[in-house]
Length: 505
Image (cartoon, rainbow, N blue to C red; front, side):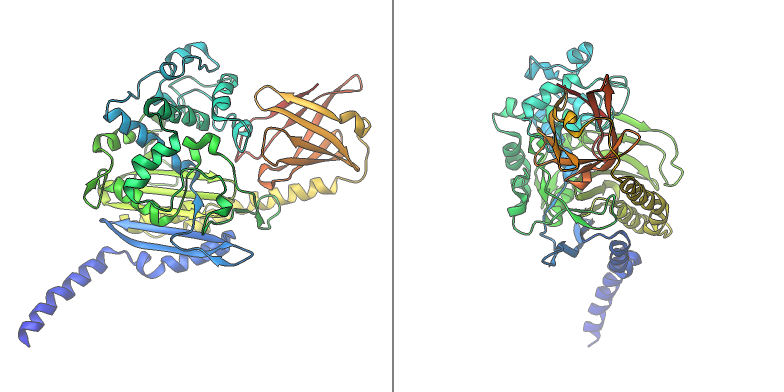
């Protein structure tokens, strides 16, 4: 009996030690925090995994993946991870460099002799590493209205990059660039003879056992256990969105995955490229992706315990409460996602959500980080919710105010005078035609995108996209000598900050 007692004591102590390693917030409060956050932010579905010391300590789905069928989110539910795809691309290229198939300092012109960007000097100098570091000198998201969900091929997008007029200094500024990552990723087929998606599958997804991850998002709606995308932008009401079609930008954001598979990817990141004792990616290649290439900020944050933020190759990095952390977010229409890993603390987090107009996917990451890094509890979700509420309510009120301005007033010209084809060199063409008492726009180079134009007053029209995530915005025509010359088109800044001028043919 005494022998059994003395055997039990170490086991009890071990259990207490293990429990002590799991913060109270994780063991006692996490689920309630998530339920409340989803309610506050109107998020239909969310999945989260936490890896600590080589073990998955949290892996759970919350809410529903489909609001009509009420099918639940679980650990296998698929989400578009969007820009969290970028580290896969950068890792594949770093892996190829390790195997001496290329150098990240190779010039893009080595692989695409006819390739050019806006500035001829940059064309001569730009390298794979520049493209993976957002060094081109373009503004953040520049060109994305032309490229996102577009019918352009990858080669056509690369060809149009010469039209992206730079406003920042090459290699000195950070301008987040999806077409740059496409360009870097397209080096892979040249070097390996395999399309990007095939190489990513063969070299990363398959060895990691990410069996339910898709390198391309085409036909996501037909994939088993796929979440649907939602937003409450502009109306405050949850609206189901069409799935994005971004396989032409695949190296920048096409991967579809779940928390079960992403936990394997992050476990490998925490174990120097190994999973279950097997070296999947050379440690030198992992290190290469984490070397800071771009300084984003070197000033202390006013609301976070950070002092520097930079970008490696497909991953952000910063200090946080004395630890070096790496992370990236991903945003697609109806999906926002988050991955984060803290190698020196053997901690990683993945959060996938199916509603794009919210900050909870970020707040949850910081809440988990604080719990493990011993920081005092602050309810980031409540704080951000209060801070964002005025802007959210204003956006809804602004739309309502514009809709109230539609009172049957007549525009400067007859509706038929606005009919015709309009062209923008970067985007391509759109068609405007009279439809009843309003105008309709057909965006010729974007999949299934139309918009209505309703006249308000003072030369302004209300532009309402068929995909509400593109926006509900005021626009105007440029009229000279009683003839329509052009129209200025804008989209939601989630997609592109720049206006596009379309000239009437």
